[in-house]
Length: 267
Ligand code: ADP
Image (cartoon, protein in one colour):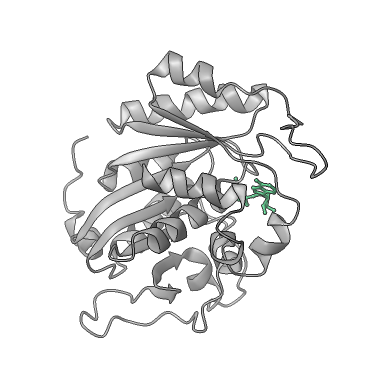
């Protein structure tokens, strides 16, 4: 896409970032943020010489501040370049979220903003963070395919997109919207992740398909997407996410869930 004029200054902080990967879903609550955060930490722990960052692009319900627990969440000007903001760091991964900025604001409440202002704010926040040299920056997109998502996709040079869905039919229809949006932006969708795909009860080895069979194979075939992954339901993911440490760092490496993430990160 054509770059809008005069926006270079807004993206100074991204100049040394090699690969920006969007993690997107068209519906809320499918586990997109969980996937984005754990993918970032999987890449960082599997490839220790890669530098990794995560950007939470959701202004209305930023979840990164509860999913990681850095000791310092105060935002400061970058020491080396005062025109940029220093990212927050947690377990070797650089992080930024509007939630960190909002916590210092007068009421700390989620942003209530109209589209154009929100779009500019997201672009400014990602572009004015001093990410430094990064191999991978994972961007947790806000759910949906509206203005904010399109602007972000136009302003930031995305290498690829990963779409998160759940097995329900409705989610499938939404996935297609997501793929089409990234097509329009000329960004390849490289993987579809079917989250909450199945449950293993512990007494047998059957994958119980609680939400139905899912459509990832159909999506793969219809759209020529190379990879799809089924991520199991795990009972205590929610409490682990709220505890502020990504589960790929806390669960044993042999856990099926962690293995799935490692496979995704390898790709
Ligand atoms: P989104 O970013 O799509 O809104 P979240 O990542 O915030 O979704 O996840 C929504 C809720 O579902 C959270 O409470 C999260 O902990 C939980 N969750 C996500 N993935 C799983 C999973 N595989 N098994 C169980 N709970 C999950």
